[in-house]
Length: 130
Image 1 (cartoon, rainbow, N blue to C red):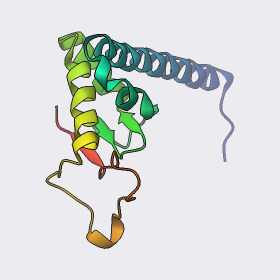
Image 2 (cartoon, rainbow, N blue to C red):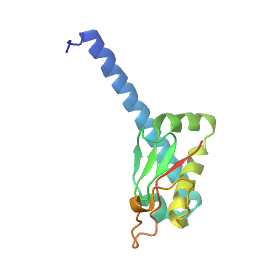
Image 3 (cartoon, rainbow, N blue to C red):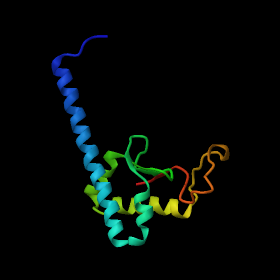
Image 4 (cartoon, rainbow, N blue to C red):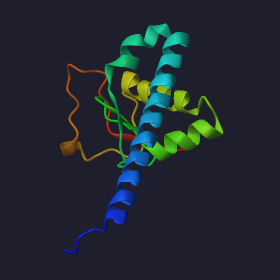
């Protein structure tokens, strides 16, 4: 395996730093969205703060599995630039899916998904379209 030149290493490190900044900014936007929902809908406080938010490239937009809120960094940044409250609406949409165990159009096979009876907030994985 050939060794990287110092210049190539510097470029890669700069790209890593830039991606880390983008992820941090997207995470702050999602926290802002959650906090704005909390201000306007205090009755959802437990649902809003129950699940951690995780940046990932495994979803194209947003996703939730009932335990974690997933978001695509690039999508969050684009959405926020286009419309400031778009992330709030997506966050609320995901929370309502979990609260109401709303069925989604694409569900895993029954043997792959067994929601815990003691956790009514659990819902199947869901990728929200833009």
